Length: 122
View 1 (tube, helix red, strand yellow):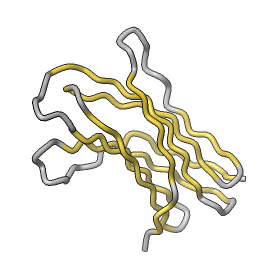
View 2 (cartoon, rainbow, N blue to C red):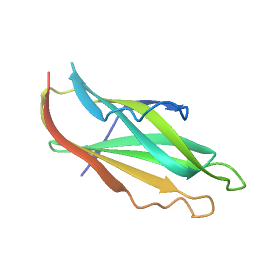
View 3 (cartoon, rainbow, N blue to C red):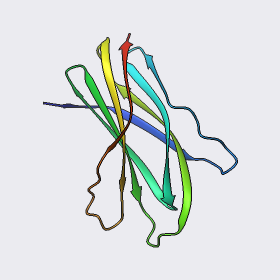
View 4 (cartoon, rainbow, N blue to C red):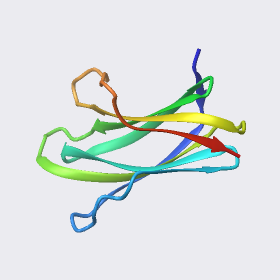
């Protein structure tokens, strides 16, 4: 059975002249910090994130939710930073997935894996 983990998410819209930030996972005492990015094919999205742990595997889902009423084709790029509080020190496998929820889809989206890594949390 999975256990939901506390998580904080900060996201910002990147300007067109900014490049893509790198994907980076680092550890702190009792926590894992994930810096990543995703892009959408239209304007007007919001991001949310959830994390769950099953044994030594932590899965983080970052979901983009379409918020605008009218779809305007454009490329929006978001940088995000998520901090997952694992609490216990140890070796963990981290799986990060992105999902996109379209307006009118009933809230369902298929997650797409984007990164997997094993690391030690002090």
